[in-house]
Length: 265
Image 1 (tube, rainbow, N blue to C red):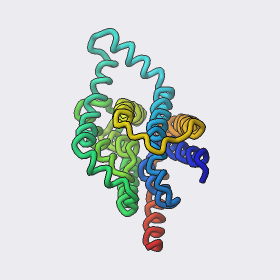
Image 2 (cartoon, rainbow, N blue to C red):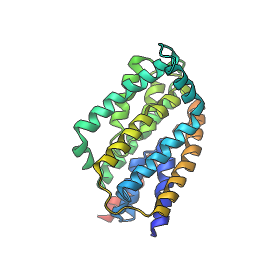
Image 3 (cartoon, rainbow, N blue to C red):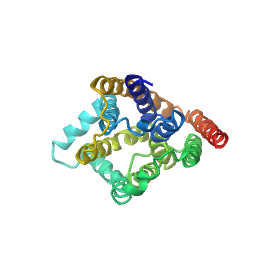
Image 4 (cartoon, one colour):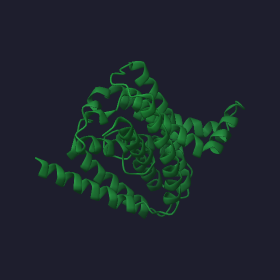
C-alpha cells in the first residue's frame, strides 16, 4: 500500500471512529493486524499528531457556537454557565489524566495487536450502547457527580476496543443526562486531552519514519472531513436513541476478528 493511500485509510478510520461509537483505537489495531503493517501502529509520531489535530479541529468546528459562548462566559471572570461547564470538563479529565500518567508504559503494551482484547472490549462497547438506547429518563443536566463518573468511563475507554464516545455518551445517558447534552459534553471533554496528548507526543520527539508532507496533508483532510460528518451524525443518532445499530456492528466486528484470529493461528 502506498504511503498516500495508507494515510487516506488512516485518516478516514480516525475521522469516523473518533466520533462514532466503534473505537478508533480498536479499528486501527485491527487494520494494523489485518494488513500486517507495523507502520499502521502510527504511520509516524507526526502522523499520529496530525490525525488527532484533525479530529480535534473537527470538534471545534461542529461546536463552534457552544465554544464561543463558553469562552465569552469565561472572560467575564464570574461564575456562570460557561465557567461551570469548563469546570465540569476539567473535573472529567482527571481520571483519564491520572491513568495516562501513571500507567502509560503498561497501556502501550496493550496496543500491540492484542486482537482478543480488542474483540472483548468491542463486545463491552456494544453492551453499553444497548443499555444507553434503553434509557428512558434522560432530562438532567451534567452535574459534578456525573462529570466524575463520565470521566472514569473515559479513562477506562483508553483500552483498545472500548469506544471513548460510546463509553462516555452511554454512561451519561444511563445517568439520566439529556441526550443532546450528553453528546456535547462527551465530544467537548476530550478536546483538552487530545491537545495534551499531542503536546506530549511532540515533546517526546520520536519522529522516526516521519511521513511525507503529501501523506500528512491527505491524512489530515480525510480525518477532518469524515470527523465533521461523523460528529454531526452521531449527535442525531444519540438524540434519536439509535445506538443499537452500532452495538450490532461492534458485535459483528468482534466476532469476525476472533474468527479470523483463531483461523489464522
